[in-house]
Image 1 (cartoon, one colour):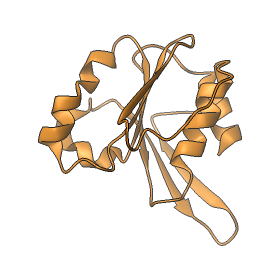
Image 2: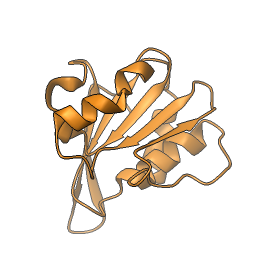
Image 3: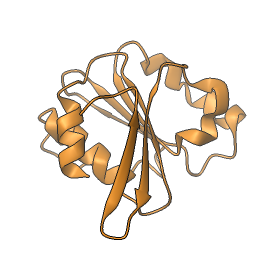
Amino acid sequence: MIELGRRLAARAKPGLIIRLIGPLGVGKTTLARGFIRGLGFEGDVRSPTFNLIFEYSTQPPVCHADLFRLSGPREIADLGLEEYFETHAVLIEWAEKAGDLLPEDAATIELSFADVGREARLEGLET
């Protein structure tokens, strides 16, 4: 997951929105960590489960959000994620909870457990 994140970081630009979907423990945060470190960030990259949003001053800047604890679109709308859509690369864990709140052209990475390791299905992105 770290390596996949690093490879995807090469395509990072403001306006890139990536939905990270998959079960608990599959590697969504690990992929985000690879992405953010791939942009040169050397500090701690933690899950935003309790803080909901972390911002990273990389180039481009990154907004890493986690919707796990939110109950639905109304709470998600109150986060103000759309404020980041034009100026940041945005990584959203548990993005399926956002419903129609995310742009239609947002990319999707769906992670799943495989017999050995993990599988990643990418839509709207190239590795």
